[in-house]
Image 1 (tube, rainbow, N blue to C red):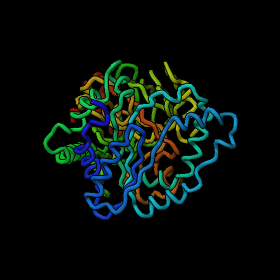
Image 2: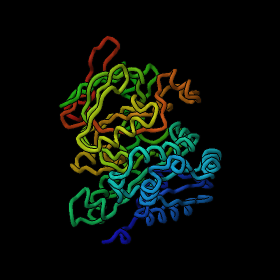
Image 3: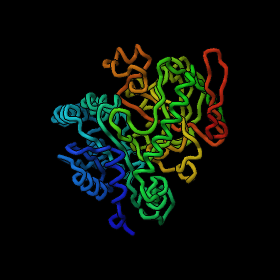
Image 4: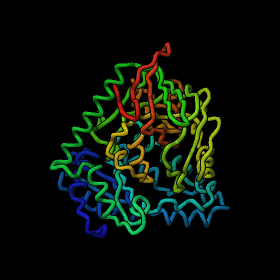
Length: 408
């Protein structure tokens, strides 16, 4: 079975009805890679059937970006040139509240490993600066958005080994996406309610901080008095930002993080796979880090963006999740972050803070304890041996996760 022969109909229905929560008259923008073209077509068909007013698509090809970086690596002026209509695009997306669906095919894993990392980050930072209004709208949960994965032959071989096909990978993804149920939309609604219940339990505890303990890890992450755990669909828009999702998450105190932590899964850092990363934090600041592979890409990212030496997110995931139980390393943040507890360097989520809608400037966010950055990247730190405690202001411990599983 080739990728063209995979029936994406039920997947497209799930992404439109649950991922975007599209309503009649809505407008939808689909950004996809070459391997996602068929799924993008199916999503557009479903969106129009559900009453969408307009669907627009954009093809993203990382090979073209790589060609640019190679050709312009020594020309900073050229790298800083961005598409002149981006301001109008982001203004329209936010003002008219377009849905934003990103389809990732992961066919180009490690494609940027051999390019000039400084040049890559310079170009990326310039793009991020030019769409800051749009990024803020996503981070603040002001528009419906969703990220989803599409199987392809190269990604299949990366995950499953040589001679494996897109169809082989698709068969692994079907139960993870709950597409093996008679009504996947209903199943994801149930999943969303389950995550919201867990978030509610955590919110009632009002923990002052979290303690992560495991092999190579002893990390204390402070929480804000106004931190709010979230999980499942958006309260405002009804969309589910990641499909699949297994996490409950919150915005930590940007000034309180101490200890050391081992990253337990490889992380795609702008087209370079980073393996065996380790972090040391003091007083909320990342003071030292290392990696077995991909160190230059990791260092360049951290150095490129202000705010990337502080935490913007902490998330809890049960090791009994379908992704963790698959025992596969996907090389995809979308999937791997939902197999493991994780932290994120960079920007925090104002909507995970009570009263977060009033934090409409960088100064207000920082004053509230929310980290600010143009970048945000997750690092998986969980394992079947991980223990997570919630601590009150006096340091009294309550177990949240033991042996990788929730006990609360």
